Image (cartoon, rainbow, N blue to C red; front, side, top):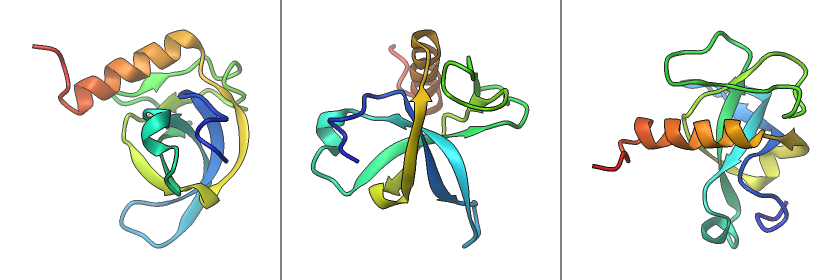
Length: 114
């Protein structure tokens, strides 16, 4: 997978580890981060997608548009993954969902304009 091939907002299935565990799970993730930053790296930055009820900062998705099977939301919790952990592409976020995710990431990472 090349960062040049897929824009921010692309949804993939990837093998991710549970927090505080060595066990892994295949789950959908969404690509975030500037492509030019990650272009020559063996890693990518993603946010997990979950079917659990959304928390306050989670972004509910137009899940069918994203290529997902069930009602889902993005957790604005960046994860760095090796590209080899990504198995396949399933879709992409709707433009309004990508805008909402960017706003949630700015808030969560305390990058709000002052």
